[in-house]
Amino acid sequence: MSDPVSALNGAEFHGLIDVADAGLTGMITLRGNLGAAKAKKAVKAVTGTAVPAVGEVLGSGETATAWMSPDELLLIVPYAEVAQRVAKAETALAGEHAMVVDVSDARAVLTVTGSDAREVMAKLCPVDLSPAAFGKGDFRRTRMAQIPAALWMTESDQFTVICFRSVADYAFALLKVAAQPGSAVGAF
Amino acid sequence: MLLIHCPYCDDTLPELEFAYAGEAHIARPADPSKLSDEEWRDFLFIRTNVKGVHAERWRHIHGCGRFFNALRDTVSDRFLTTYKAGEARPDVQTLEAAE
Image (tube, rainbow over the protein chains, first blue to last red):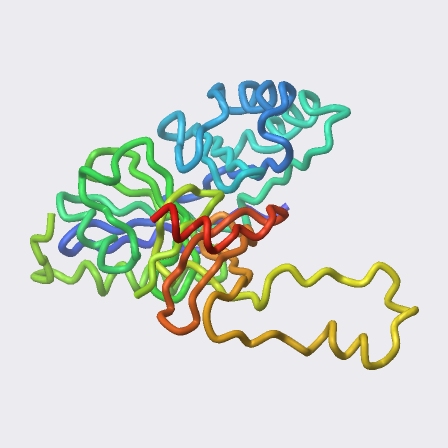
């Protein structure tokens, strides 16, 4: 077996804010009827949280559950435990029409950290990122310039951004340009 | 930029996140092999192309990924309402009366 490597392989950029590869992150897609008791049980078994409401992310740090669409959740777990947690979800969902897939290696995860993190993300995404409109616990799928992305706040000054692995370089380059030193706008 | 209400995300979001997906409420014939060439052509290509209120499909492609329907005035480019796929087309008069 070869060693797994994240798309950006530990890349970092320090400018107006810090942009960094978040490294290998376990991600599981769960699709099915989210209102079903078995789905709730599966989420509890994998990440320990309840089923999030529309646009919400529950949990923190390495283990979280995010709302992706009316029938889809993203379960974030430690990379090494993905296979084991997929099995847990499948056990909990036995007999239910649902799908559990390990998507960890299909995606790239970046962190954007710094007091101007909101501003840097707001330059790239058509989202109201003012503190009143977006904060910890909010989860948003949107686009970042030309590519689809999902973002949420893991700290009051930190965003975690997920994009497809194939466009990880592009995402990193975008964030680097948006975070050039001296490019602060002071919008928030 | 247009702001479009996604009935699944229950939020009004910028047009950038959405993709247009043609006229709404066009049902696929139950048995295509029974159709004449003209009827099949009509199903595939012939659209109403209205000037005024148009029922059309949109997809929240950079968000939840769902298709939904919208009533948009093709003259003013104003969205009258959006509704979930499968729901009946809302009555325009009722909508205007409610405003």
